[in-house]
Length: 120
Image 1 (tube, rainbow, N blue to C red):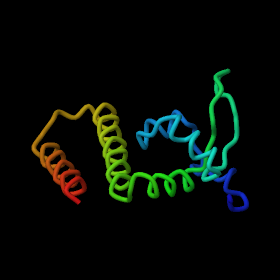
Image 2 (cartoon, one colour):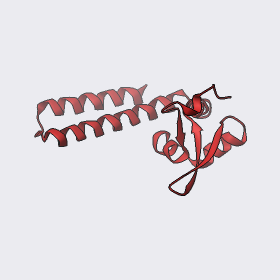
Image 3 (cartoon, one colour):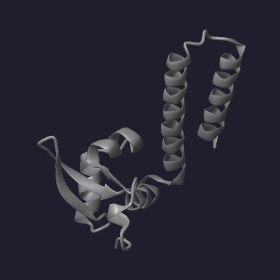
């Protein structure tokens, strides 16, 4: 199922815990996909805790199939927004900038973008 070298490519795999955080899917959802042979997986351990490592592309395909394209787009948009907000926060701390009108404009723009994604 997996392409040659896909398991070793950076960002191509994720754990079941990361899948829950990024895509909002439960471990049971992932196990169900594994049992129906929709997902390849590898058992691994992080800091002594067992977890499942799965391929991001296969998980996205399974989510698209089971929950729909709209769900996947919305969840990926929310994850991207969280990442951008964190990056902005980190830069503010680094530069120690006081909040200003440009920040409010950026926040409003991000809110409008997310609203348009949700309205679809």
